[in-house]
Image (tube, rainbow, N blue to C red; front, side):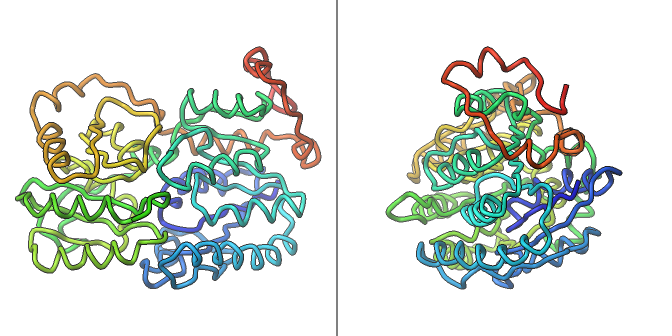
Length: 396
């Protein structure tokens, strides 16, 4: 089976790393990696270089991200990606295309695959994030896809409720957690040397992105940075995603770091370095899905701000608060308290056990042929519950 794997930014590649590793190692699968979007942008760290440093071969690179900070730039980037991917995928004609999550630019490969009769496998469908366009993108990708790898049991039920046949839907966990099981996470001395930052004091992690459904997409970041002005601990701030409003957010973050020597801003962190920093931090604050999906694996307190992740399944380590200075500071106080940290000792992580990549590769290797994948049967409402324990073509 020839599988094309699409990645558009560091936001998705950290999740794709281990599925890609296992696909490349599988004797029944020929894997091609297509890199596009922010990966090729110097403004966002040219992360294609990091992909290659990790030993991956980039088979195709697609320039499509406009240098813009607007919703118009986002929509035109989708158009550019569609044109370029039409040429790329029509030449190669893979048996399956693998996409992940909910980035707006993923609408391009899914649409092209639909027109070219290429089946699509989608990772992390069935989640909810009501405060961003990501939610609509994720649901659109689900209905454009033919195989689904969901992170949680609840996400699997949502995909089934959309009428997808049970044999196509598999709960595998969140593949970003595979780093903890499969990689060696660097310790503080390594991080201190590699990143050239002081890590001698307790510190926090900051990850905040534009809220793409809000009238002011950078409002969460403005409130957070104002709150952090009153905070005394060192902090590590991560670059936002390449969405409308990201440039304003980046400018404000840079200004904040210029007059706060306790703050460090990173355009791009290698994923094992990010995990190492998370693992040794006091807490994470922001509105990133990383706070919801990844920090439970570390039992790390997380302050989640605003509506961006509204509706997403949560573990007990999440403290939600509105994007208001006073509320953010109160939530940080709670997250730092010994009582709260002690309460997380036996918490359950709904996002899996770090084996998603291996499961995804094995399931893809066992899929039926392209034509059988393409012909989808939409189940009547309620029937998916009755059939959810049954197998399907090629899967037993």
